[in-house]
Length: 164
Image 1: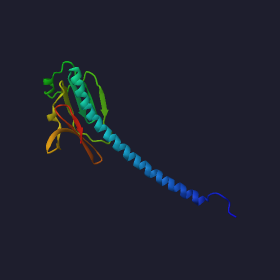
Image 2: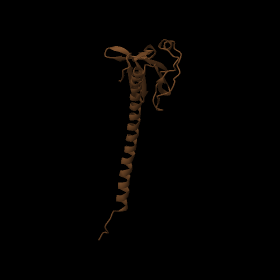
Image 3: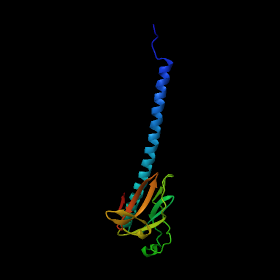
Image 4: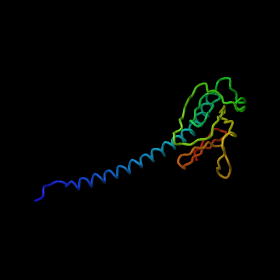
C-alpha cells in the first residue's frame, strides 16, 4: 500500500511550473510598469502646460515652462520679466518652482528651451518647438520616446495641451 502524499518528482514539477509562471509575471509587470511611467510623464507635462495657463490667467502673472533633457519645470517668472522679454531667447529665471517633472531614465526627450504663458493664457515661443502633424496641418509640440514608442504633446497658443 502506498503512503498518502506527493512524491519528490511531483513536488519538483509543481515548483518548476510555479517558477516559470512567476518569471513570466515579473517580465510582464516590468514592461507594464515602464509603459505606465512613460505615459504618466507625458500626461503630466500636458497637465503642467494647462495648469501654468490657468495660473497665469487667475493671477495675471507671467508663467514660464522650462523643458530640457532632464525633464520639465514650471512656475511664475521673476517679476522683472515681461512678455516681450520672453521673445528674446534668453532663458528666464523662475521666481519659484511650482512643479518639477523628472524625466524617467529610459525616456528620450531631445528638445530644450522654454515657453512663456501670459494672461489671458497666451503661450509664446511656440515657434521654438518641434512641429507634429495633426488633422492635416502641423502644430507645435514636445516629443518624447521610449523603446520605439513615441508620444507628442501638442500645444496651442491658448495653452491647451493634447497628448497624441
